[in-house]
Length: 241
Image 1: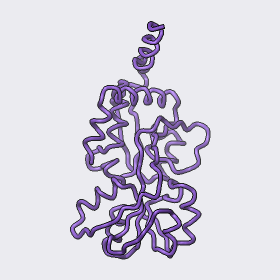
Image 2: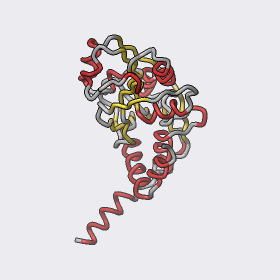
Image 3: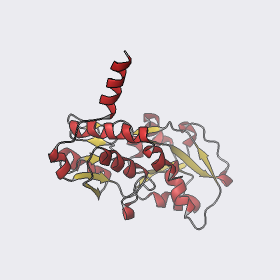
Image 4: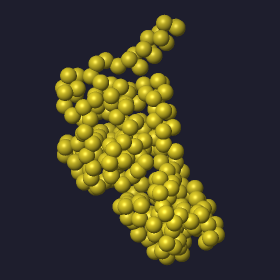
């Protein structure tokens, strides 16, 4: 019995060599340039991007190219085969798109200025407030959020999440909706930052990577499992606070 268990573990963690074709051709990742610290375009780094790269390299795939574009265009490029991996997918996934195991989880929150003294414990308590969300927030967040938008005093989405922090600090909107790590990334650099309340009204959102090739997706998942077992995954996560 013990021998069988050891064989299973060995097969799970020690994957066969990747085909020569995959090793030679570039693996193209499509990413949004506006989601630091998950993706930082200037340095081709970030939590999410570094994890994906590490998992691929673990499987012998080190010819990695990152290109930056809008989420909508990236989805089109994935379907057409012009990119191999997409970080975030908001559309309806049809046949031929293969999500990996979760790379990490986003923690979307509502943020308001402390001086407003808002009590926001549910999505309903955004009613009659001006709300500024991130691009495609109604697609990424739980359905009650999209349904509740009509009850907000106003609702808008922006691509540039730095603008969300700016408009909140200038008191131009009541509440912004974004990932907590992204908020802290921009707020830490904001010159005239004000005290805020962070309202955790959304569940954590696991984020896989998306592939248009099942073999590559399975190869990536093996690499992801391996970097977790070796401690590399936690090392990457610990590098960003």
